Length: 262
Image 1 (tube, rainbow, N blue to C red):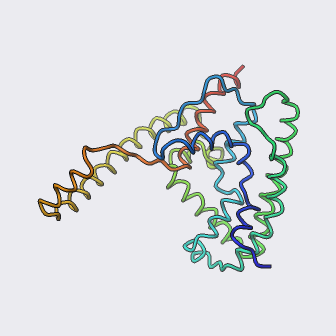
Image 2: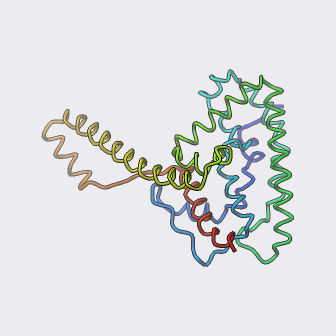
Image 3: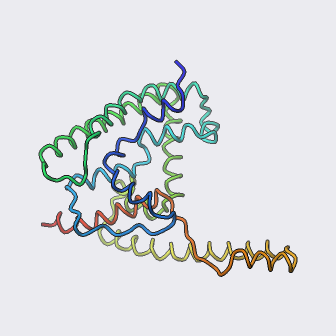
């Protein structure tokens, strides 16, 4: 059966879109690069909501891996053709539909019925485990296990590039396995922020040097026209959606810390 891109998009619609719909609404109205706004103090999410947010950061989600498999560069490295990708998509589509069905009416801001919410979260965890098993089973059956492992490595590498190593080490899928002590986590968090500022300063300097060298090739008249068109300097630092997801997860983690200690 021929699988169209449109069919795949619908069948592989991310499970957690329903959970994070209000976040997406906020992000869609904010210019790219603008800092993520703070969490309203009036919002009191259920305890399991933090776990559902963390799942959004998992680079090994089937839908994320399948998106990677559509990338020609990834396909070339793993020697995956369109037919192979179609087999993987078909194997995972049904379980993804089941997962989406569980949360189709889920409202993360509704805390009126915590028992029902808990039951749905337990069902989601079952489906999550089933998804992970189905993903490994399908990919390992279609091509050697080392290719599946390499695909996961690529997914993690891309997340590091988009969200920064500090985010991934301290709050991503590696965090539990690394088992930082409280003191080490505090040091790592401080150093990550410090080194990130240094990195951004160096990046800005590199960009400024590049721009200056390129503009030096304009004539005086061309440079005057350019300056008139762009005006005064304007600082703009685009932030990836993945980085924003990590930032919001940290905000919710901080927001819920007092509740977990009660």
